[in-house]
Image 1 (tube, one colour):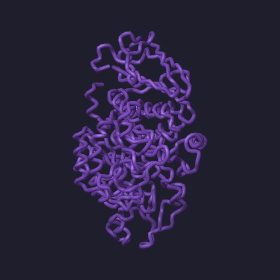
Image 2: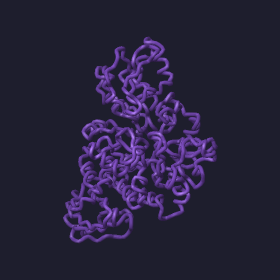
Image 3: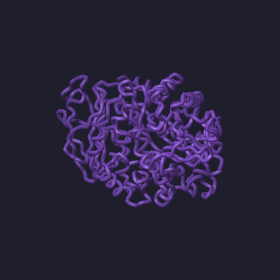
Image 4: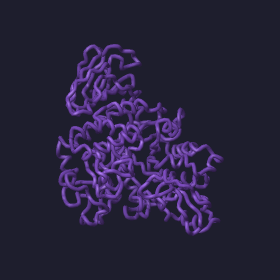
Length: 564
């Protein structure tokens, strides 16, 4: 590959940062974060090294699901600002070298949306067919609900018309009928509107429910289900050739490949690696790298223009639904043994540092691993300083606490009194007096400084986003050694999941298939995180790791033009 190739498909080497405007920074003292406040913090994100900002929903909403219950897809919630404020954020972000994507919520609306209000007025309403209805009583669908502690089924009776409407999520979030061509046209119109205002793409919510809704049974007569994604991607890229769709698809690997578009690679540009994330936590719980290594090796081959998005934490519950009951029990026992730490019987409502008992060795090892894995790392706001959670927060709100900028009763998030904040701050040992941006930016040994170094190192290693991935054989079950190679150069990463020091021997003699090298005499190895050169012995490399230690090594030919 050429280094200039990375600008054509920017998402393959990006650093994505997810935030909720209402919990990031409050500029006017009303206790709610806003777009003007976000604009004031874009330089902070640029300094950290973020290259893509992902905005959680900012649309008008009754706020019964933290903004995911949308009542107007073409506007901005007045609590956080105006469309003009959003354009200023996008314009300023672009000036600082950041692209901006936002949630595209096309599976459902709020029941307060004008479309649904009109649809439920009469069975003859022009908007009736924008949603999915049935006249007969539904069977038991309790096994299909997304939030089993909140809903008993995926159909609810509408008293006004005496029919049932479909909702895979909450009853106040009726599903849109994508079999209706008018709905599909409207979805494209929504995407086109925000692209015109400057967005660089979308994180697409709940993609399987959007594409393969079995209850929308007449869709097959209209088009193949995956044609929805193909058409939407084609439309978005006609409007903006470099715009992306990053999909939420928590399915087995075989099914995930379909959402990339298979061999054609013409559906989602990117997809979150939920299976890799879940196996990561199993590996952390067991202090055994093998579950994660297997998950990475089992990833299906994807088109060269597509990419995996890797993550340690996201804005939802930390789902463990793809683990077996026994495996999930192991992770619960290690990282969430109390009932208030668990959610929906399948996940955790915690952030990483508290799960690892605040051990900086383990926390830093986990994030070193995240940035070295093949794919595009995605951070949830506050991860760069090691924020904790508020277990008193309901459900997923436990990890959506206000950003902690400085010491003080509101953590520098707002000038309002603590009782007026949109959400309570993280308490106890993870409160702002212990974890905040101001203190950590001034400390070269802080989590923030470490994360900034990781971001910069990752950005200098396009092999991690573009290279061929392989697990390097070695006998230690607690160690993951892997290589990402483009043929011309490669990065080797070695991580110790265990508390005891270990020395690992890895064979690098055949790293370059392009040149068929069998020895390393004409290349150099650079220690990317610690600095300095490493000298192998006839293609064999001895790597010493502390407990929970990690090393990144770049292999490059002599005469390579990049700075060592």
